[in-house]
Length: 260
Length: 307
Ligand SMILES: Cc1cc2nc3c(=O)[nH]c(=O)nc-3n(C[C@H](O)[C@H](O)[C@H](O)COP(=O)(O)OP(=O)(O)OC[C@H]3O[C@@H](n4cnc5c(N)ncnc54)[C@H](O)[C@@H]3O)c2cc1C
Ligand SMILES: Cc1cc2nc3c(=O)[nH]c(=O)nc-3n(C[C@H](O)[C@H](O)[C@H](O)COP(=O)(O)O)c2cc1C
Ligand code: FES
Image 1 (cartoon, rainbow over the protein chains, first blue to last red):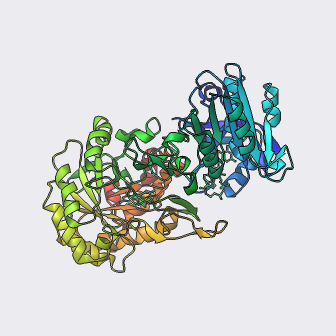
Image 2: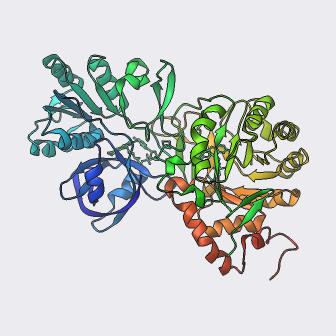
Image 3: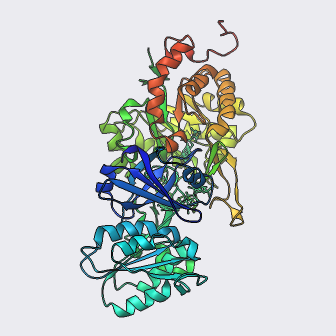
């Protein structure tokens, strides 16, 4: 995986405390798999993992993040013309879905990687989109999905946008309406565990996980999550290298939501 | 400029090695770091059988430092030999295998298994990891235990044996003398210091392993002090590490008495750090009046003051 120094060519604040930086990176834009991430240099000892939020035909890639601490605050202060030092594209993204309906479920800052999936597969697959967050201020990229001709079902914990409640209600309805199909999801771990439980074993379900990272490239074994080995025994999976996207069948939490 | 150095019988093209646990087994950094250009690679600690390691989270950033509690997760010596060593061997890297065990016999078993394996140049005995409850660090606290495990490993291999010291001990020179007397060919100093952070938001320890090992520039002065003391206490070479990020940092360790150095945490932020340091070494050595790496080793020691 190469290291790039990419120029910020556009900066947006789509919601309070949310920033999207668009970077000039034609080779990345062409090569990206939805769900892959960048390990972005920030001051200090560790880089910060951020998923790609879009890849445009004119050779730009996006990083959309919520400001939560020192690293994302520093990133939020970048301006057009600044350069970002990134390792990318990292990890294994969502596999190309089989034919048939595809549901994208995104929670909060888990939404951006699913927009890349929508960009990639809107023309080839019947896509449905469910977006959720605590409040309206954390539901990002709705207009982007709409520009692709998709109408996301939105739910918020406080009812400030869309339906009051969790993504599980629209998910339950989608599962009842569609016999087959597959589900791609990214968001907080409890959300992913709930999605995996509702989807069950009958259809492919791919989940993009988060974990604190050191190297970002598979070397330090920091970013592990409990997985199910081929022998059914628990084994550690590296989010940066084996993931961040895993089949729900391989994840211990997804198999046992009560332990999430 | 002559960057060559040696750690006992092990000849190194330059003094910069990758530190154990921070560089995996090499292929992870393929395309970013050419392992043949490094002085060498110390691989992740290897036990006789696979270890699971600690529950996550396993890293936490601190001021000028990094806490980790990986807990020595490793594939075991057989899988290491079958799956991991070939990459480094095929590229001609100088390989130092960091070895771990829960008992003396386990250390000796790994050492025996690695003896005679093509592509392994030295063993580094990790008797100093703060992240495992048994074995590891308890050897690093007790000079008699440290000497016994060193002797057991020496008896099981013809490979050079470097013993990696813990800074979490009150008598580092005494420890160094004990393992040197037991036959160690070199010393590595230092491993991480025990530390801890609280995740204030979630009201719990930041690391799944509760405590962890502190690395990075935060520990550099402690590491320099350790190299300074240890290199004067024994006659065997010392490999220095702890927070090295620049060629000037390397020179600091050489002057303190190190014959070579390792770079760990810096690689996470800048994967190219080791290569950049090696490229900058000639300029930095020349700037401070040295015509070789060897000339700088121990040059700050009493009696060596030349200006
Ligand atoms: C594969 C992956 C993709 C991600 N994609 C996005 C994204 O598209 N948009 C977005 O807003 N966030 C994303 N995150 C989360 C993002 O990495 C964290 O919000 C960010 O690292 C916080 O850094 P900080 O310095 O601002 O916060 P601090 O809390 O000060 O960070 C302290 C340390 O904890 C780590 N950390 C804190 N929160 C997380 C977290 N949730 N996951 C992993 N490490 C964390 C930081 O990297 C840093 O090492 C992703 C995480 C992963 C693992
Ligand atoms: C994530 C991580 C894993 C480590 N794993 C090992 C290990 O397996 N064996 C070992 O002897 N030292 C291990 N260390 C210690 C380093 O090799 C080194 O001694 C220490 O980090 C100081 O150097 P640095 O400040 O340049 O990182 C590890 C350090 C880190 C940060
Ligand atoms: S962050 Fe180092 S292995 Fe994943």
